[in-house]
Image 1 (cartoon, rainbow, N blue to C red):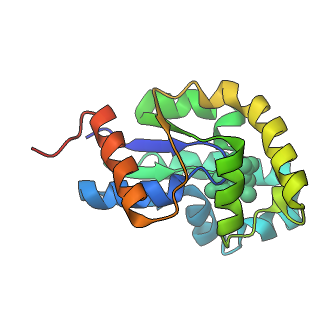
Image 2 (cartoon, rainbow, N blue to C red):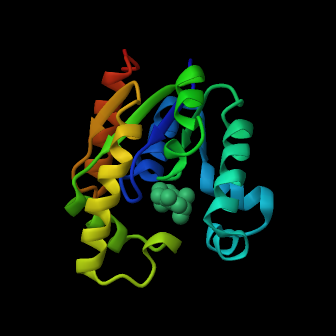
Length: 178
Ligand code: S3P
């Protein structure tokens, strides 16, 4: 099996869908942010605070190269991963890439439901968050749409909906159970 890499904006469900997809395929799941945190013994928020965004992006690229070399895995990236250096080209060269596409409203809902601290959106009001998502999504979409596959994601607020998304994704990738 070619490895599968999930990309998309913060809150698109990369980790949630990726973990379930890996489970259903019986392969190992990696989340790039968690991988970075494990390798550096620092949270992503701490790395942003200590090294700034550019320092984080360097680390992110290096860790992408490490994690993506593992065989037969599902890897979910950070929302910014495809938008820096030649990361998108690199991912397309060795994996099935999937863009989890969601509307700004769904992204905002997911982000509000989530507990992870995300430096780029910290302290924003609901209105500021939606505005920020709309603007930065426009900048990032040209990178995201370079993925080989796109999965439209609606609100993932219960397990059944997550399972449906995983099933749809498996169908798209030609990995349906027989
Ligand atoms: C980022 C997304 C985060 C994390 C970092 C920067 C981004 O990952 O890598 O906070 O630039 O969109 P998630 O998409 O998993 O939240």
